[in-house]
Length: 353
Image (cartoon, rainbow, N blue to C red; front, side):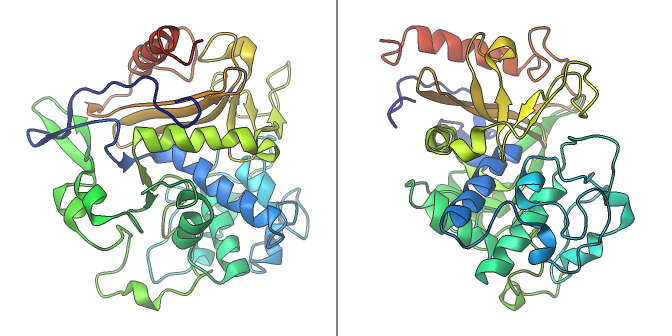
């Protein structure tokens, strides 16, 4: 995309196997690309003076344990969004309604041995703080502050997505030896009018109190959006310098972060930064995010020097994780093919003029 216009697109395969095709307008669970929308929501509230991203989490969640290097105030919202807040993911980083997020605040979530560790839980904690500050549910904040103003019919855990678009959505599959198995968003979920959230069988969403459990709408990975939506979302980073400036950079000795074989070398506020000298797009800085979950491998990126955004996704992948690409550790044998397609499309598109 360039100037909010699609200049190249392609899609193959099925959204629902044997039922309808996957297209660039098909909504699907975007995995960690969702973090862009969460961080953009926090940034908008910061710019509006509702919250301060530099303040510690205990301003909104006094029950957050006092521990670690952050001191009495706890890690700042910016630190949590940049994975520099001293937290580590537990086995489950979500809470089922009607329980409270405090149930997950145990000593096991803290670590102090590195400056950077990718942590999904931080986003649930930030979403809880945003709810406390505004007294509104996170899904509605994201919709009103980010998604709707951008004209996106998208939402967290399908909340706020039109019935028509939801019915056109994709199931995420994994392949086994015999067939493909639905991992999330099966046909019944796509027909359901209610948000797809984790609740006890006798619970009711109407009893939810904002600030009770920010993990409820999966701010770390639950956005449902199409490839076109995601490319539009990534392009919004052009206007968000406070997010794209690196908060953390890997040092020369590779000792200050859990970088996963240089999968991560720079991270901003909710934004994975690929510097030009080691980028998925050789020679180009990229701002955006990868997504990997439930058999999906995806990415949404903005190339500031080209003023171009793009998104890609593959689902239905085998249970065993694909081998990493020799070109970049954040690519694998599926996504390197998609990245090649992006480069080829750009080379022949009107954007390259």
